[in-house]
Amino acid sequence: MDTLAGASPPEWLCLELPPAGYAEVHALQQRVVAARIEGRMADELVLVLEHLPVITLGRRGSRAHLCLDPSQLAARGVSVAETERGGDVTFHGPGQLVIYPIVDLRRNGFGVAAYVERLEELMIALAAEWGVVAGRDPRGRGVWVGRRKLGSLGVAVRRGVAFHGLALNGDMEMAPFGWIHPCGLPDVTMTSLAMENGTPVPMADLRCSARRTFETTFACRLVQIDLQALERRLR
Figure 1 (cartoon, rainbow, N blue to C red):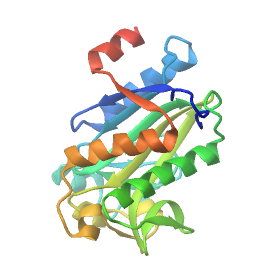
Figure 2: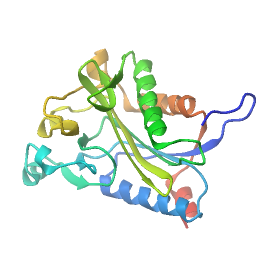
Figure 3: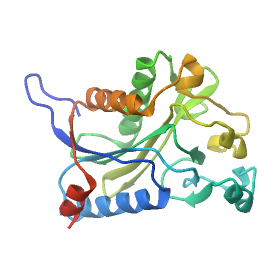
């Protein structure tokens, strides 16, 4: 949604979470989506977080794209979760920035394809802030640096409300990507901002950059909310 000249940008709520398990964040998304659909909550909400180690399988995901079986992954501290987002298989872990906007697409003038493209624009702009030139690639959604994949995305839409979102590799352990075929493609090499620019990427700084870039990309103003205040809204 573009803001008219001279108009104040719309306010979207932003909840910052510490590193969290996939199941608890997924359950929170489900509750917010239900509240939006039922009219109990009118605000757009953006979740910003890191996940504890997990491999997620989207709607097109196949366990054939796991290079280790679940017991081997569990021994390495990695869980496996099936989910309704688009896309195939990916890994989430500390040092990877995850952003889940929960957004009424029609209210904000987005078709699904345009919304996904805006999420890619966000990752491209954020990478540029850290000195990394990223772009799109015909092999799949997300953002790439040459032939290396830097960020992934997958969304779900329920009665016009989009949820799930994007994952941008900041400064993280990359070995777990070798335990899967990322995006279902056996020849994909994953990369991170830290690998590309050759310097550490503190997550606190990346989160700050992400909030600023999100506001520019989506022409909104993020207003911080804590979990307790969000719970009150959901009730």
